Image (cartoon, rainbow, N blue to C red; front, top):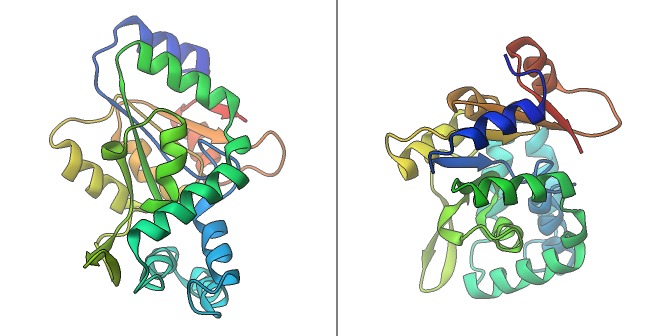
Length: 228
């Protein structure tokens, strides 16, 4: 059992082995949900159907997995290059200042020690890429909800499983092969499978507000909690 974040970091830095360290994105690396906010913005700008955001909210109340898939399905017909340009601009204006300083510092120390940072998020991959780039994480190490592309445009089909809950582990296994992460970091219940699968886990929680189910799991499992 690791009593606190410093103890976890000391252990990781004592014998770095160059393995992956995996981070959730929204609520873990930065405050807020860039995927949801981008979808709301795309709806407002009429780049997706006018009812896209309301339909997303309805689906989310019933199934996170279904809602996250819909957030990419509804982008059918959008040019990927244009979507990425919009997402890049959106992150720089709305989210660049929301990156948690303790997470930036943690990433830097792990990278200097030789670990390989990855991001695994349930947001559309285009929404997550600019934030990962701002943190020095290369695009080939970013996993998000992926839509099929035909002729440079999204088709509305989504690659399965959706990257939430056990789907995060499935995608990481596809990309990492037999290597398990040295560390997984997340902030919500849908990160639990990923954190339990990694060799070590760290939970990010807000400085104020009620603790969620993942924080309660951390208390049971002896995982450190970082308040950001």
